[in-house]
Image (cartoon, rainbow, N blue to C red; front, side, top):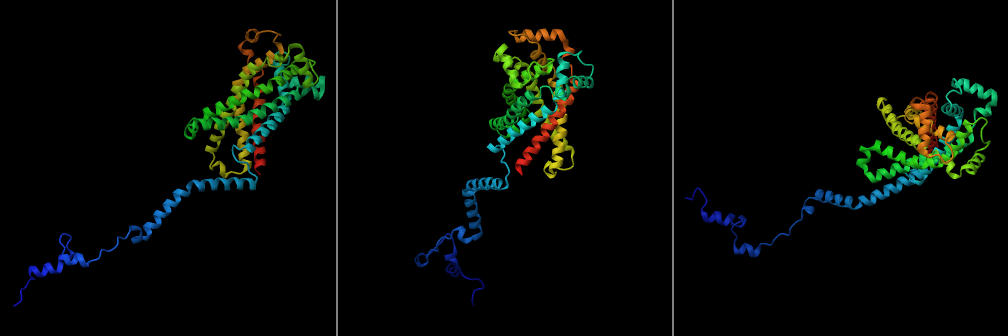
Length: 372
């Protein structure tokens, strides 16, 4: 009778070649080792994914270069200006030249009355009375006294200011790094605007000296811009054209810092209150926001810079040849007092608000036109 369970010998003969711990000499001699199959061959999907990762890593830098080239070509074909390119700086410089030159010239009647009231607060009782008297005595040309040095001076200033602001903004952003530039963007705007204005005022100062003297002397001391420059340099030398430079810096640098920093912030706040993002609005709405932001920024600019503006008018009209800057400032302040530093503030708020909004409006239009 056969046993119910298999014997030990039968089990050993049947399963010994499958055990990882035992092997027979016959099996080792007759069994051929199967070649090792790599995971990539065994699992084709694994291999494809690995290859894709390797190729993507090796091509990423080349792809970025190609994308940049394609972007530049696309912008060239569409006529758009690449940000912070030479064309972009040229457009900003030209926009500043046109914006500042034309807008300042347009408000010459406001500037004329402001300067005369700053120099002699008793000359006119009000702005409309001033324009009436000037118009009756000198005609329309008298109302625009000083328009030529205004145009030349503020065109030069605008070119350096707007072109320089964009250049310094990029320069300081690169120095700070992307994260720091974003965190401290207001401080960066202030530094860029102050640096640009420092240079721009050197270009403005000779023309400002001629303008103020033309507007505050009756009749004007010169009939033309370059005739006025010749008269000043003939009596006082080249230094006579720059004797108002320090108060001009005191007026224009805080003015420009406030303008650029507050404008950027005001425009951001306006868009925050609007239901959609800036990019979703058309050019008409964006231009309107720029105009409103410019006017509000202009009001702040006028208040911050007005005492220095009074000093610019006073120094250019009353500073004696050879008189030290500090002595002249002390003498003028003693004459007019703290209250006198605010003569003509209301008309200047109106003038600067209008100027700033028109500048932002015109530069917005110029850049939009250049991009299309």
